[in-house]
Length: 412
Image 1 (cartoon, one colour):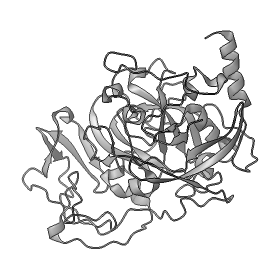
Image 2 (cartoon, rainbow, N blue to C red; image 1 turned 30 degrees about the horizontal axis):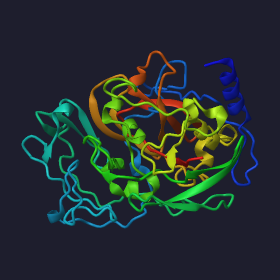
Image 3 (cartoon, rainbow, N blue to C red; image 1 turned 135 degrees about the horizontal axis):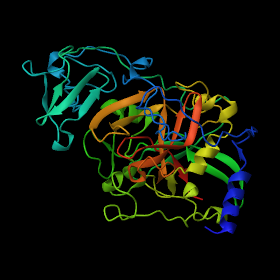
Image 4 (cartoon, rainbow, N blue to C red; image 1 turned 120 degrees about the horizontal axis):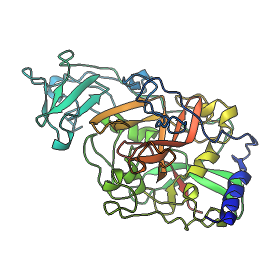
């Protein structure tokens, strides 16, 4: 890159001024935020210690049970049994609208999930089902319960949240609407004014993307599929949106989750010249890449996440980005701590299926592989925006095979 381009990009990043339809705050978030880690699993990609942001800070238990029930609960009869990991959600099983579950059918001799086979690629891997607080391991083609306790579990309590204030904000910002022509899904949108050469505003989704048919964790993602937290469609349909691997979010071949861009296994590249802003052409941090977003929209870039996070350092991080579960929605962005689907640890290739950290952290994919740390293999890690209650960073990374959220911005 020549000196002129370096100067232009530096000028572009330094001169961005962000207001949210009348919000006059001008304080900026720190460029990089180190996320403290309490164990080896939480790897902070923003720090100099080569760790991937947000994979832990907590024990491996799921926090989804902390939600206030937003739905009525009801008892399920024995004829409507639900098997962990094999819930087909037919009319004879559990209704997502009630959260009711019945006794779990388990083989008494070996604690095998009834009629639940696992693919050979998951042999030896583990699967944690937080709504039942049970962990299984794939052994000889079957999911085997790792503990003899709680072999059968019955529950009549819902673990859902009250979403009535998802789009309530402190400043009275108004929302637009966009209907995805692919499936008719309607999204709230919000427009923010910016001072950028040739551009006066940017419009964003005010909720996470929720495109695709739900598949259970452990199944290979294909076109037009998504994961829902805890394999429960309620989360996808109530603001949390779908969870996608990095390649799915980018609309790249599935092999790109394991191989680097431009290789024979992943023969794709970004169009870095698509951005109409002259100073942003050629910059990965500002690329307009459609990915899994609808036509005319793109996966939010690193610079766009920086604009959203503007002011976070002085407003206690994510507290000001979302009213539900996180305090206040001062900018109308309605951010949710949707957690993520962990299928691989950052330092291990062992396959697992754990939904983690709902109600705690938000993980959002961005275009680009993570190449900021020589200790991490860039072909295995995708860039992401990581947000918690009191820390935010758009310089984080997560293994591509994991499932994270997507936000879209309108092309300009």
